[in-house]
Length: 420
Image (cartoon, rainbow, N blue to C red; front, side, top):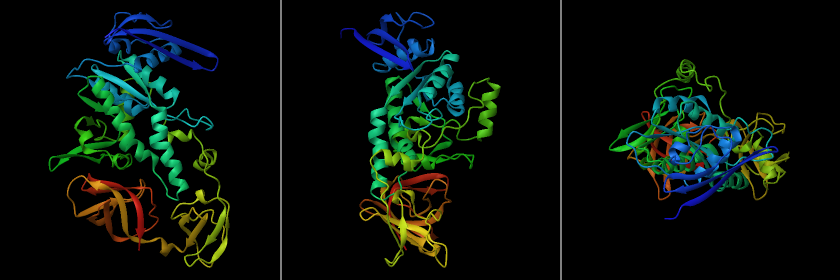
């Protein structure tokens, strides 16, 4: 195969950098990359990815390398998902000296007020690269902005437009992000992918499953509930057995720049904005309409249907003899249905998804911050139905139902309906 020329560039304000590389197999045979700490010619792509440089220059080289990156297999090598934060930085130090860092550049709304703290921002990419280069390790950036916008952002907008309450972070972590990272690990010749999630991997009945992290305050297993067990053959969560405070202490002892870095924000594509303003900018109108009770009697008017989710009390603005809560939204007529708190309670929940291992009795977690509730599981053609051990309030279509037996997630799906 003939050598391949690749061009990468980067810009910050009026500053601009460009890099030109000629690649033969997995080796740089010609390079024009001003601003790098040393010449790239003669290096493998893996070696070139470890060369530091001025921020824009390194960004341009990374852009060029990402288009063609590959590396020969090495049984010692571990790919580490880097966010620029403390968790991934500690995971990286544990995997050194045979680690290769990888950061996903994901789409953010350019109209958002502040995307700098997001795990996929340009600043986060630079921080992740600098963490790798400080240890003499390679770092690769994958530009997945358009794929992310299609796989995560579009369903978020369409979900709200159809009257459900989607969970974009669960969709990203449980599907889009991990698939992309495992694919990269294979290209990088790595035997495993490590991430900084506070979760664990356990085996039940010969199937590898996501399990709760040891720190209940930081447990992120719910966000990984929809991960295909087959992916877990290549994935590890090295921080899952410890508390966040232990991670920060470990980072401080190692002298890592990320030791005191604040947490990244949720729903990174909002770029620090309120989701209602985001929806408005992306084609979902405010949809003012009537407020009705359970029997269809009109009680008042609301200014925008997308501001309400099941269980919400604040902002309804209708006087009544007892507190009223949002029960449901009906997008076709922009109607908000409200009722007393007792009307929120449901006993059955339907979800599209699957059981990873056979289970009849589980603990079901129906929102990220909600406690798990005992339930019986009935498999259906589309997924499963949960018969809850007691009525539960504020169950929202679009959220993920994660099913636990002990600490292990034995099944998961997206909630489609709930009933009394």
